[in-house]
Image 1 (cartoon, rainbow, N blue to C red):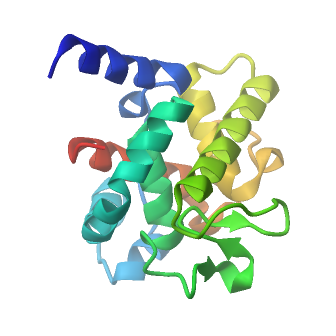
Image 2 (image 1 turned 45 degrees about the horizontal axis):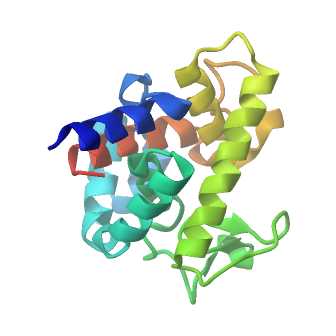
Length: 196
């Protein structure tokens, strides 16, 4: 790795926070049951991410490109794709969530004008921009929070909106599985170890 690559990785980690520094309890029992896992927590999140890795590799170049362009950690984008659509495996013709969620990152058609094909760079860009918007909204709502706390809060809001985030400790209450940010963060930490 050259100095420019190291600098670029450091730069990515510093824009919204370092996902490796975010505390996480991982997946709930309900989320772990998607793959019939008998474990929960961080270990379950790692297993869920691992089950998606082969499919995720199909999108790695898009994820990396969008991450670089939007200054978002590609591991976080991969983790959201893993959680939202199981890297496309949970979708039917690009749709999920009872026909409301579109694409790898499950952009909700009720709140957003959809762009691109379900597995396109345009779609991943849109989903990443939505995430960034939520992170910024959490920063405005909780100006006393650290960068990493705002990052995690933005991830929670990606699933259940800013109004659902009322405190740091209970930010996932009301998210799908009551574990969204904790599961995504744990998956992101695992994807990071796989070169995302």
